[in-house]
Length: 408
Image (cartoon, rainbow, N blue to C red; front, side, top):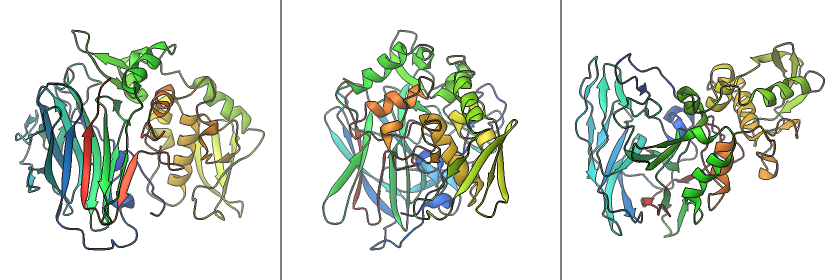
């Protein structure tokens, strides 16, 4: 697959009592179909729908509710039923109005069920014990925003996978960009009968993530529980800062050291793995890092970022879908989150040997990657730099798979 320029799609929600985040339903890791769901033509025509096998190995007795939500090729937002039929959302309101019940009964513990998913760029949600509360505004669907204590989904145990299915095939991932919660893995069956999967935790990995975050000084506030003490999730650092669960200065020391280092030396960025001849050189002057091309012309500049910009890969590290600033920004974002910018002046550093070695780092991403069976995860928006993301792709998928994994 050609180089993917991913970007989080973050848009402000309506000012309502929900105070929810309104986002466009994107593909894996929040990427939009236009970002990179292209490439070589599929080996065979991809049908309008493909089967999705849902397997419940969770060991929980709670009823499971499944939702297939997304944006159709014609740009309409909506949901799909178990047969894969797409239904556009009706008009919403302000304050938001309840969305139609788009839930699909999931398999009971130890059982499997096959539904069909259509060509969409969106999400496959699943919840345990209680249906999710979706609302519609005049701008579209209001997604759960559990960093807000008044969000109606705050005390529901749920999670989601992200997928894009189009004429070039399927891209399906497990994601922790927003939160780490109910464990699951994803997979795809190919035309030759083989299958590939990712997203599975090591034995003990689920509880291990929470234990490691609680043991890391300053990071225990990421963990959210129900009033009865049941652990529900760990918020990603970006959202934990919103709740006060993580200090907004948590990365300041590392960011300052990076800025000091590259005031006297150069940072070389080669953002395209298949184009090693394209390089940019960065040097800090005051509060700004300026990047020049091979001709010595300044192509883009970045003000010194804060933790918000680093964890969200946005704001001062915005990554537009262009061929210059976006690729440089995603490289910087990965380097800051993985704390590789001080150990390697040539970025991206794609070998995991240097990842998360500094005491000041994205410990959320670290503890998740350490506990994945294959080491792959989407723990921040540009975790695909160097192909460390939990993503499966096939140009001629016969079946997609989503497995609800054990909590133990």
